[in-house]
Image (cartoon, rainbow, N blue to C red):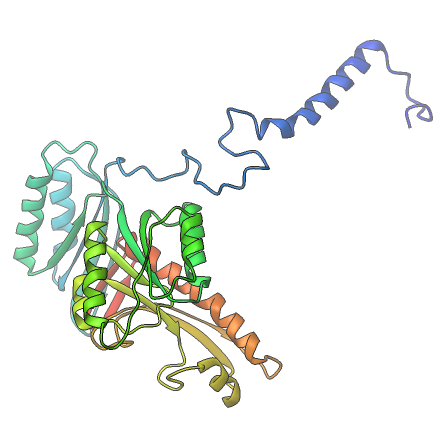
Length: 340
């Protein structure tokens, strides 16, 4: 191209600059995997969170959630209280249920420059809440929540939780996996997470739950996630920990086994998934997250199952994320979900 160009021939200095530019461009990819880089080389398949991207629990950020009867002055009272102790509000969200006449607020604040102490601030929050007859919850953000995942034989939800956690999308510690079958132990082992098997029968159910709760207590569990755990848990279990469950949204139309087969026979046009808090009323606890997808006459049973599993794992992760980020307030068997 240069030979056929009418432009004057390149001199030595121009050739030198051209070569330097070419070698600089060729050298760029190697910097991505240098020893100073936060990314691993291509042959390292680790999905560990880069240190600079992992959340640091020592950043002095706290979450305050309050709810109670709606009244004038609530927002001002908490703003003045936090400011009076030297805290800075990072963001704040609020909601009013006009039918129930209830007020909800989530305040994310920075206490790195607080000139009092945590006990003094908690006393102040308690006084304001008593004045407005409100309930409150304060998370200082200095410890990550510990999660126990319970599974049976379906693995899609477990994989999604563990991969999203390893990618840094779930700011918690998945401390334990419990199952009533040994089938998924290799998955937990590959992530270095303790895996416990507890065989469950009608006769041993109560005793097994006692053993499971004991193990959870030993690991300091804060949240239990039923990732397609195919056993009914007792009221005592639900009372011991907050429990998030995931299931298809065919209930109550298609209860029992093989719901996707029955939905296909019925010719449904929508399928969905629901994540909710488990309560004594089985699948009637407060709903956290739901999603749906379209179904057509071209979809076979396997298509419904595949689409359903995609929904289930996505909806479950969204619900777990909302819980561990303290974005949920439960009332009257339903949830207020703040954006965060």
